[in-house]
Image (tube, rainbow, N blue to C red; front, side, top):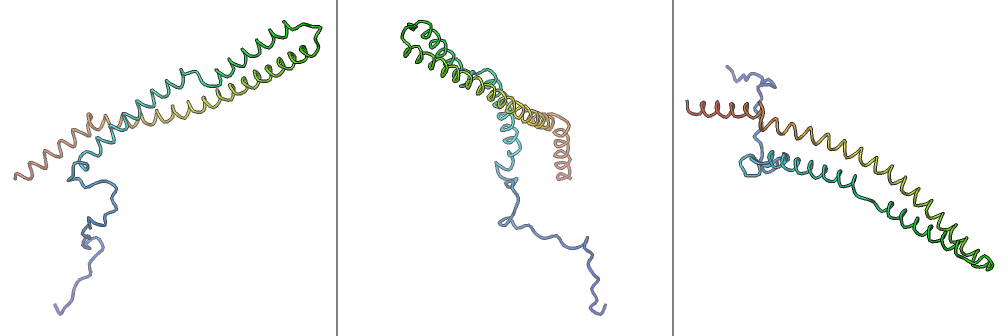
Length: 170
């Protein structure tokens, strides 16, 4: 043929041999223990993370927070200052003025504690929304994982393995 070589089409070009040393794959090789068990490990981590987040969400919703305690303590100090003002001798103007200042200061502290509590409730609401969103995503991932391991994908994988073994025997 006079040294003529037909042109190689791109679809007929030889495929490069993968270099295991310079591989950019994020998953470990499938012939190692970790390679064979990566999916179940990720599934277990997802399940544990989902349950932990459910626990955390319930714990946040039921735990009294710092702002409630601060409001309670401020209210106690205010009540004590009012009681002190009532018991002060009205003939001593310096003690009356001091008691009035204590009541005024205590009232300001109570007002500040109430504002902190309202701000905390708003932030907790935002955190709850975020956690519920994440829990929804994790629950859908969990459903997908269970469907794979116990649903049609698992039986399809088993069928493929069986067909592969039959092909090897032939």
